[in-house]
Image (tube, rainbow over all chains, first blue to last red):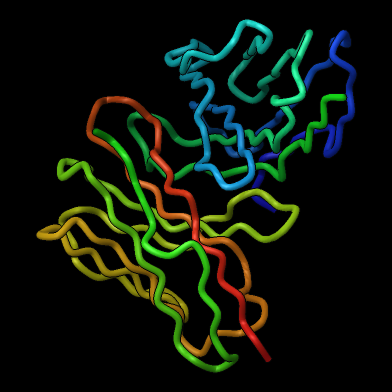
Length: 114
Length: 113
């Protein structure tokens, strides 16, 4: 295990639903990330939080809303998604600026929008 | 721009052979590179890293080579095993002051028994 836990592992939701993805890291890291992984595409960085402050938002539609209440937890709130949002959503953490830059990933949440 | 690409999307090898997975990067100022392995249904897993002040680093059965002249990164896996079957990604860290990594598309390695 990598020390990064994501729940749920699988999620099917309708376009009018509201759901949340959860990520928890037990590594004492300062930075947390949300990535989207679609078939045959590179990993797409969505959001970066450093010390609980959002430092990057890569032009992600507002139907995705991140929340970082503390350095160990990260959420991704979802509402009125589209079928093209179906993908594997990966959470990662790292030591941030002053430490090793390698990211440790969770197992991901497989999201299907119907 | 900042992008990391892979020369081959798929690679098939025989069990016991050595595998070489290649990666080209475009930002000559990137100072840190990582190889990740992603098995089916799992998140990417760290394999090995290398800093830009090195040209080679060895781990257990894996070696990463960095050629800054041609901006090329490779991962060598010795005595490839069926458990090595996965998608391999390289990632680079641009020295932009951001914590983010830039990932390539990935190469799918299949090990045939």
